[in-house]
Each structure stands twice: as C-alpha cells, then as structure tokens.
Image (cartoon, rainbow, N blue to C red; front, side, top):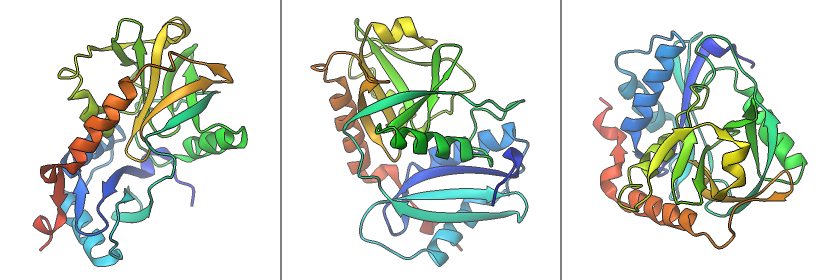
Amino acid sequence: MTRRPREAVFTTALWDGNTKIANFDKHMKRLRNHADRLRINLPENSEQLIAESILKSMEKFSEKKLINITFDCISREFQTKSRELPKLRNCDIDAMTIPMKKWLGQVTGTKHGDWQFYIDAKAVAEQNSVDIALLIDEYCIIDSDRAAIVVIDEDGVAYISDSRQTVDGVTLKIVADGFTEMGIPLNKAKLNERLVARCTEIIAIGTGIGCCKIMTIDGEDIGDKNSTISRKFQTYLAQHYSNTDNWIDLCGYSN
C-alpha cells in the first residue's frame, strides 16, 4: 500500500537471523532523528516493541539477513520484515545517473513512507544493465537508490555530500569512524562534476551493499582502477561486524 511521506519512518539493519542486530543503537538514533524531522511521535518503548516484534514473529535463520523496521503511523505499530542479503555486495559495480526527486519541508533525506522513488530508481538502473542509480540535483551527486556515496580525490581525501537532502547512512558512519586510523581525511562538499572528474575512487556504502567500488558512471570509466581504498573500507567493515560488541541482543529489551 502506498504511503504518504509522513505516514511512516523506517530503517534497514543487519540481522544475525536470530536475536541480534548489528548497531541497533545507531539505527534507533537515526530512526528517532528522522521521525522528528517527519513530525512522527515514536513510542517511548520503541526498542522493546521492535524486539518483541522480531523475537515473536520472525522465523529464525542461521545466516545474516537484512531486516526492515518500519513504524506505521496509521496503525501505530512497528512492522518488521526480513530479506536475503544481496548477492551484489563488497564488489565492483557500475552506476548511472537519475534526477533526484525532492519532497518539501524536511522530508528529503529521511527514511520516510513514500519510498517508491528509490525502489523505482534501482529498477531503472537494473533495466539499463547497471547496478546502482546515483541521484543528481544541480549537477551534484546527492545520494543513491540504497547507499551513501564517498568520493576519494587524487590527494586521498574522502568527500561526502554536504546536502541535507542526503540520507545519513548508518554504515557510512561506521566506516567513517575508521577513516582517521586509515589516514584518510573526511570532508563534506558538493559532489560535483569537477570533483568526480579528478577522483581516484567513488564508493557506495550501505547496510545491504557493503562497500562497493563504482567503476563506471553512465558508461564512462571513473577513477583509478588500481586504487584500493575501497578494499580497506571492506576490511574495516568486516572487522567491525566480527566484533560481537557491535551486535545488540534484542532479548535485553524484551519482557
């Protein structure tokens, strides 16, 4: 059923298939922030309600999956739904550009109820034999259909979009925590044609996609094919997920 933007807010997390979710605290922080921007009042015991929904309703699996956690404003209930991790993960990918759809107010840049545009953008990319859609406004990359975008310039500096219309990625924040120890400065800027033209890598980072190096945009080669910063990101993210401290047991929230 089609929703209006302010009729729902959601997040998509990595689930171990049983009782634990990776970075559940970070996902809840973003969910509350986006709910505030959408003027949605989440229940005070949201963590407990989500935990109970997952622990009572979900089948248990032995492998990691993605889990979508949505608060529906009409029913005033949390809805949870799992799906398989994509096969396209932590690899080289191709991209195409699509004009960004913008909503008024503070909606754009949140995980809101009217998400069909992003789903359609991914479908358009796949119909054109590429893997991801880059969302463009005023000749700048603002976002993508399902991942945050990082541009690495020729000096080894990482840039992310400075636009408030960009969805703040939980996985990007995790990787960004390791930028300093990897010796990679991080700045916000307009991801315009000039910056893209002199980049060594463009990387898509997301819960589902992991860290993927974008090799072409609209059929044109991008960056330095020998650059390996995306591999460093992949290693850092793998180490993060291997740390059991980053997996929150939902049993601690459930009665």
